[in-house]
Length: 167
Image: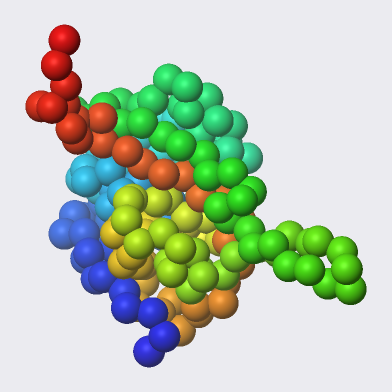
């Protein structure tokens, strides 16, 4: 096995999850934000215009994530910040025949450079979660470490460190 995959992505104990398909964005949102499958399902339907059993349009995701980068999101009872990762964090720089080129990182190289934090990762026609260097995805995708990263969104819990703030 190439990648160690956490089974929590595929083990949502919910009748709605068992009857769904093409729900990788819902599962990724649920695992990245630590909310229930139903909460994530409703969130995706309302915010990404997701149709049941049809998947989620990536353009809707990109548009909303850019908006939420400034406003943050509320999902369930949680308030979270979103950071859209820039090109320098999702691509590798190479020198080829004297010319600098950028190539998309693979999932494996992204894991090696982002060992801490929670990330919603988009690869071709699929979404998954990376949490503290661990992949939350279907078991069968453990054999696909060379998938190219399309876009990445960091999910930051706003409550972290709130106790340490002094006014």
